[in-house]
Image (cartoon, rainbow over all chains, first blue to last red; front, side, top):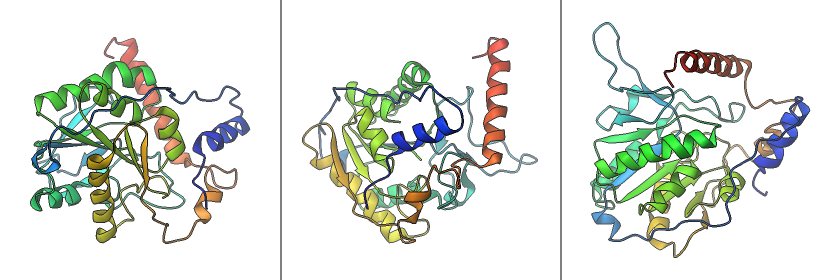
Length: 165
Length: 122
């Protein structure tokens, strides 16, 4: 069975809801490409996700280990937080077909730690990069993308794995 | 996410994306895409299927190493264990994508943004 055509489906769906002007999905003719400059086993690898990751903590006794400094902006998720304390706040997923109860099904932190332990990747920074789902392409291009690059440069990142939910 | 991936590539950082909305990502155009043909929410493998999640992550790393140029898409070749019925139901009137709860949360965020904007904080 062929893959779902989300652009066509959402356009038809929202038209049915009374929205005449369809969302203009980002589109480019040219695509930038950077080849790997060294073996992956020597690369420092970043993980970026729009799963709106948050951490369970007790506000009575501890501070939130995740510190966000903007409104739905890019934020750091410390890599030493146990996976079972992480959860997703995202609601833009197919709730009829599945769930977001298993972090590693959309934010592969344990799989990444395993790849590191196996020597498949060289190293990881001490933070994953969190993002929100955002409909404003201007905000993504002018604020979020430069922020992620800033994180990558500060962390000496060689390659990035990106996962939209 | 495609836009951020493109931005990183433009600035010398190779990327690989693991995603399920193939048409949206390819419409934008990214360097490397590992396509997992699953309902939105589990692009890295089915919940609690550690073996499959390892397989997906390994494949993404293989793609990082192997792609010779932009717009390289690999299909992970996985089929959702519950079958493909979800594909016919997604974004249909009988099964709206967002729940009423999600819509309320979205409206609250929009309101919060307006407040912050009025205060000049964003």
